[in-house]
Image 1 (tube, rainbow, N blue to C red):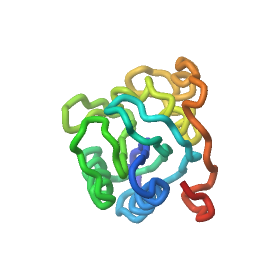
Image 2 (image 1 turned 90 degrees about the horizontal axis):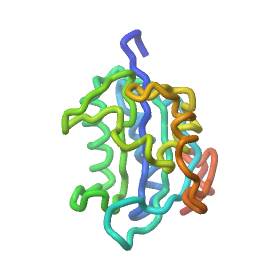
Image 3 (image 1 turned 90 degrees about the vertical axis):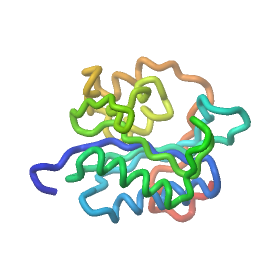
Length: 178
């Protein structure tokens, strides 16, 4: 990447269809995208759904850190195209989804327009986001809160069974199945 590259954090989740394949496909498409270098991928976790309608199945969640030459809006548009390639439908707010890609942090950018909210407005409240993030970028500082991801995680209570580690090198490991 050139000098104009930006470090970003992206959360991944899936609770419909072949959850593991959805996440693997999302990462593969990020890796294949021009202007994006995936630097690290977190462990894989299974989590209970948070918010949204009742009767949702559990999620598989992960996070990745990447370096990109894309502008934030371009990266977000790429992420939406990747979601759509996995038949993501945006029908019910916080509803079940085949693939969810959330742009958590894009360098030190702060944007609160409806089409681009970074840093993600609720990431610091969610263990299912911060635990995987701390696998790949524990010392990254939240652009608004001025605290590291690790520090933000220590503020959140641990709920028994809220995250179950599934696999470490899952995005390359075909023997893991969910």
